[in-house]
Image (cartoon, rainbow, N blue to C red; front, top):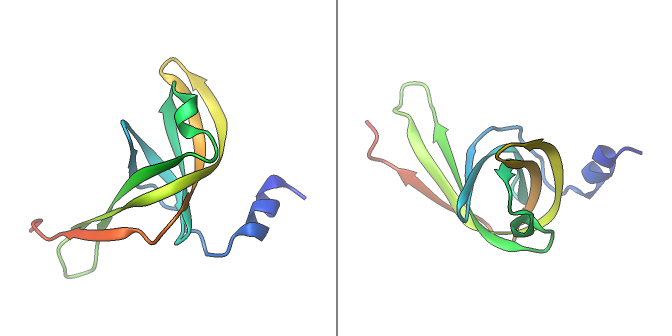
Length: 117
């Protein structure tokens, strides 16, 4: 059984493959996939300790909604999550490109920026 198959067995919610902007304290990255219970994202960092499993941190995710016939709106998700695993994807001159799995500890807060017209 592959690691991906093992992970799928533990999932309780459906994941969506979405590339969204994600921010954690002092750093930004891109999501790979997201679900109601967590997010998997990539970030380039030289501070591996920040992303150790068991670490709880605030997270902010930005998305843009688009409905035919309506204006685009910025949607911001924010809350807390705990890192459940990480893996080094690549080593760059800017640091390690790290894949991070973060489990949400509570439902994320949602805010919509209505000022875009």
